[in-house]
Each structure stands twice: as C-alpha cells, then as structure tokens.
Picture 1 (cartoon, rainbow, N blue to C red):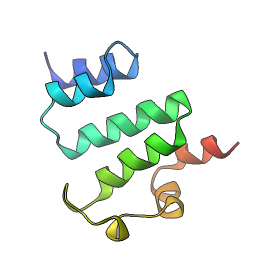
Picture 2 (picture 1 turned 135 degrees about the horizontal axis):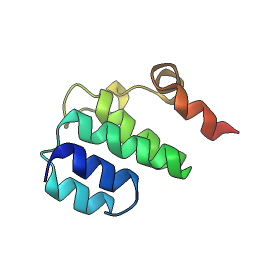
Picture 3 (picture 1 turned 180 degrees about the horizontal axis):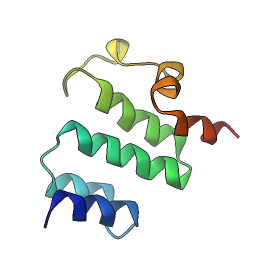
Picture 4 (picture 1 turned 60 degrees about the vertical axis):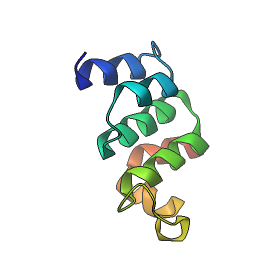
Length: 84
C-alpha cells in the first residue's frame, strides 16, 4: 500500500497510530501526518508530541532542543484551533 493510502486511512480513523507506525518507514512526514490526525480529533497533547518529533533534527532529539508550544503554533497554525 502506498504512503498516501496509509496517510488517508490514518486520517479517516481506519487504522491506529500503532498500525500506521508499523506500516510506514518513520520518516518526518509520518510524524506530521500523525500530528494532523490528532489536531483533527482535538487531542492537543498528542498533536504537540508528534509535531515536536516532526521538527526535531533527528529521532533522538533532546526535549529541550525541540520547539515549544508557541513555536509550534507559529509553524502549524492549525494548533491554535485547539486552544478554543
């Protein structure tokens, strides 16, 4: 199955985060897609976690090097919707 098809299945709620991670290659785009899924479902904490991974320089990045919530809101305006 293509990455696009997996992205669509995730965003439509047809597969879980865990299934998505197993079927994809853990590239940065996967973290973004997971973050967007949680924005759409209203889960701010999970969305922030996945977006931090997306913007981290590598998968082993230290938390203090990852963008904070305000930086993420500047980069991904959709996060502001979760504040309402």
